[in-house]
Image (cartoon, rainbow, N blue to C red; front, top):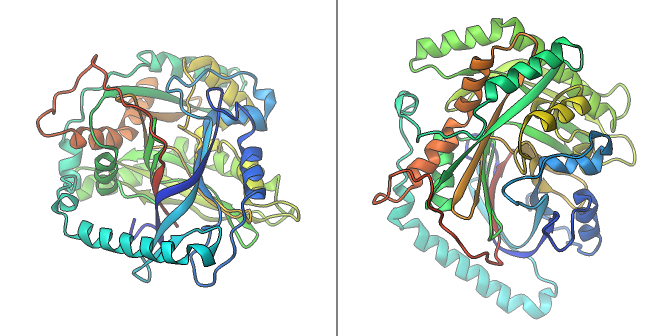
Length: 457
């Protein structure tokens, strides 16, 4: 959003949506290859003075796609939401808001500009009129999530019924594997499921107010919606330079300014958090080293603190110059999934996650964002996210486990990370139906439309 990133994108109408997965027409094929195949059959003429990355696709790649990139990880559990393994939306209409210049670009993609000129100009006029009408709609000012940080922290979330009641036991098993030398760190997640009738746009609006982040997104595929507010860059590339921003090390926000500063000091001085962060920065350097010119991978802005609505993190920036023949999509593949969401060594961490977590992760811990036809990308991690399907909201969160992790503390940390999405869902419930249901389901027929909203740097 404004202040976090420069551009916001909204796609009112998609030209096509490429979906992969066992339940999809294309089947469970390599999603990156499916994306490149689509790029070959669709070209967009460059236009001067328009924001970059408009010639590509917006979409996500689910965590389990790693089986196509690194077959040595073996089989992974199935995602219970039934979401596509990957989905890429190719826009026909695109609105791009430039927060820096306070400008809105309305972009219509036409296969024959001469023949379609009148229809396109009429459509642009219609969009302008719709935006003017929306600007006077009081509904857009009724989002009630603009509470102070203190109010957010003391507001109880909806009742949590985590599916992984044995999460502390999972942590203990992971610690044993670490002590035995199988790996150094592993990121274990847990899942919360709640029934909701909240509108996806309302949920997105509440989440964007409560937890503004560099990567805000709402991807509507008709039969499912993916909503999120991610603080973490998955992979970005532009002008031949690839970058990743590892996040490792977490503390809750304080209810007062004094407590907040104390939590920051505790985070910075923690030997555990520092060691974990350094290890994952090294892993990010290794990932970039697979596709970058030797000697060009550098660490910038090492271990600085970034604050979000409910937590604060240690963040570093790692970048390198892509080697000839490699592009940003190759870098995305080489670093997928990033170490901060899997562990180190990465392959063994992914295998242990499959052994301990009872279900597949789906979109969670994957990557989402813009994939440019020229190979440039800007993608965030799928964390602080919500999958909506058949009236159920799936919220997942995790914690990095090392040899001295305290199981109960890691359990609390992971649930703290889930707090903002859960509160957004609660506040989006219709006023007349604030009760939280545990059994009744709300079904919805899939449609063939797809829209998205994302903010990227």
